[in-house]
Length: 312
Image (cartoon, rainbow, N blue to C red):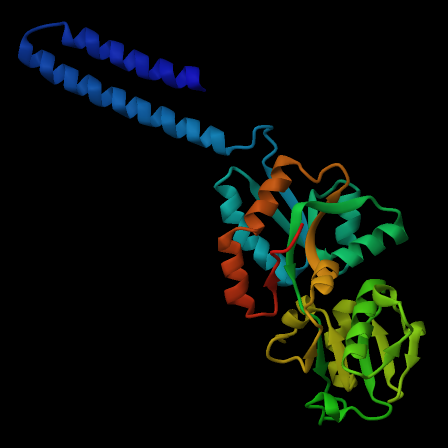
């Protein structure tokens, strides 16, 4: 590209020299000025072309395909698309409504990456399915606080202390999100888990249930739909948003946002092993950590989604 740009400029300057050496002084001056302007235009065009080529991916692979949940993941990616376009990348996002296919399509190579899950779910999915997915370089993007929300089954559950014997509580049924929900129920004192179970907890690890709560285990995306038939529900941040709920204003309680929780439940860009540092993946994660995207997250979700700034 440099050779091409220099050739254009050189040819224009040569033309200016030829025109300046012909005819009388006045025509020479006009011709020289015209040639100089032509040279400047050619140089500017060459510079623009060079900038365009510099922005384009060096390997020519300018398409980034990402499988995502609608809220907030696809919404955030939509904001990132224009920023990536400036770097020569075309971001193509496909929305999935479940927590299985987004991983399957990345494992198969049909998609470059996905953006919908936290670290614990990714690790659990790999273990249970024999997949080979990993976090992209600089791929920890945001954190969504889990919350307990009031259901409408009894019509009067406006606070945690309204809990009563036999109340029903909807929780996600997948391994890691169920553990997260149980830990939150333990945090507010509704149950006690066996010592040491942590993020591997299941309903079988409940050591004490003083209110004899009935835990209704359903697929994570379906938990908000249970609000009319349960007394309380523990809902993932993204599904709460889709249901018109905000953890900062509507939740009766949220999980403690200590360092461990953030590390375990930070949402990530996941790719197939070996693709962690591909130029286009690095471009994607860099944009998602940009000030423009952080500002969008903070202003749009008002605490329901929090940009991640911890160790990667």
